[in-house]
Amino acid sequence: MPFTAQKLHCNQSRNYPMADLQVTCINKEPRVDPHHGITHLGGPGSSGNGWKWPRATVISSIETGTNTFYTLVNGKRANVAVIDGPNGKYVRTHADGQWNDNLLALKECGIAGP
Image: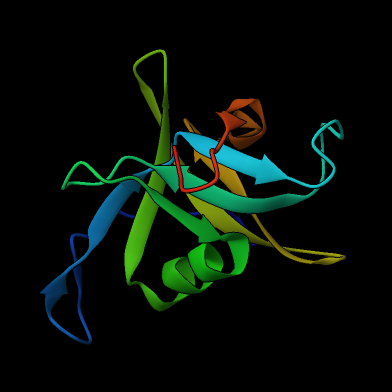
């Protein structure tokens, strides 16, 4: 099933604004593996406090339409989407009609977040 980019600004079933969160860091296990194991995603928060969520929480938030997530690399936005892979669900970025690995290139999140 092809990915369709959607610009959603509110959760239509609950009629409240969705947060559009930038992902600026990840945690992986093992960190040296370039293709597997994203465990957490994080980024800056609107109140100055960063956020860091488990991958499962991000996936649930995307699937329920609670939040959207994106990366910004060299001024170019890539939306984070959920992929149902052979080993379960994972997250990946999509921009300009192409799937890419922007998440894997991000820096490591600190203990509390970015």
